[in-house]
Image 1 (cartoon, rainbow, N blue to C red):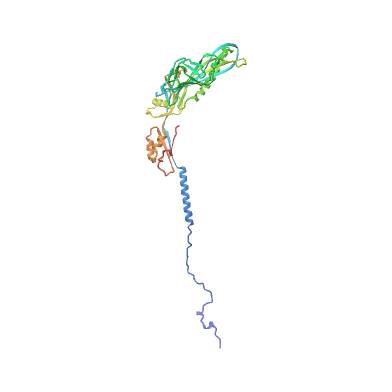
Image 2: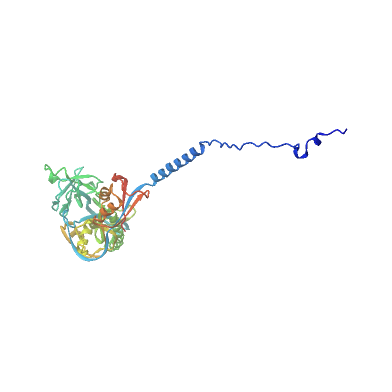
Length: 407
C-alpha cells in the first residue's frame, strides 16, 4: 500500500506557502519635544536690535533750528550826523595811533641844539560817564616827577559799561634835555591834586618819551632832509593804514576813507656815530569809527521804507566810503560830524537764538513754526527733529540748538 505524503492528504488549495510574513506594526508617531533655545535666541536677537536701534536713535537724536534772517542789500548815497554822545542815534569814536620813521643820512655838518622830549600818552577817565575837557598846557607828572604838557585842549570820553573812557594825546617835556627821555610809565594830573578826580583821571605812556637832547649833533641840509621825509611819509602812510585797522574796537566799523593822516617833521635825532645824521618824521592816523549796529540802524532808516526800529547789523557786503572826512585836528575836538556816505551795504536783521530756544521748547513742530513766523527778522527757518518720528521739541531749551545763517 502506498504511503501517502502529507501534501497528498492536505489539498494544495489549503496549503500555505512556507514563507516569512511581515508583521504589521502600528504607525505610532511621537513628535520630538521642541527645544526652547530657538525661541530664546529669536527673542534675544529682537531685543538686541531694539536696544541697538534705540541707541542709534539716541546718538542721532536732536532738535535743531537753522534761522535765515532777513537781509536787504541797499544802495547808499546819504548824509548822517554822528555825535560824540554815547546816547546818540549814531555815536562815533576816534581811534588814533602814531608812528615815527627814522632814517640815517650822511651828515653835512654839526649844530648845537636844545630839544625837548615828546611822546604819546593814553589818558583814562574812570571818574564819570561824562566827558572831561582839559585846556591847552594841562600838565602831566611822571612817576619820577618830570612834568610834560599838551599843546592843545583835550576831551576824555566818559566811562562806559565799567570801562574807562580813553584818549591819546601828545605831550612835550617842560624842559630840554635827555633827563626827560623816559620809558613806559604812569602819570598823574597835578592840577587835580586834592580833588575826587585825582585818583580816577590819570595817564599811561603809550610810547617812550624821546628826543630830549642838549649838545652838538650831526645835521643834513634841508633839501636832503626833505627828500628823505617824502619817502618816510609814503612808508608811514602804508604802515599806519595797515596798523590802524587792527586797532578798531570789537563791534565797531571802519569805513573806506575814514582815516586822516597828518605828519610832523621832528628835529634830527642823535647821530649814529658813523658820520650820519638821523632824520625823523612822525605820522599820526586818526580813524572815525561807528558802532556797527548803530550804523546799520541809521542806514536802514534812510534806505528801507519797511524798517521799524528792529535790531539790525551790517552783513558781508559793505562798499561804503566817506567822502567828507574832517581833518585830524577837527576830528580830535569834534562833538558832531556830518558824514557823507556812498556805496552798497547789506542790512541784516538780528535774531536772538536764546529767545527762539525758550519760545519753542516743548512745542510741536507745527506750533514752533507758528512761533517762528511771528518773530520779526526771520526770513525762513529749518526745523530738524531726530529721530524722524519725533514731532516735538525738548522741554529743556538747552537741548535745542539754534544757529543763525546769514550771508
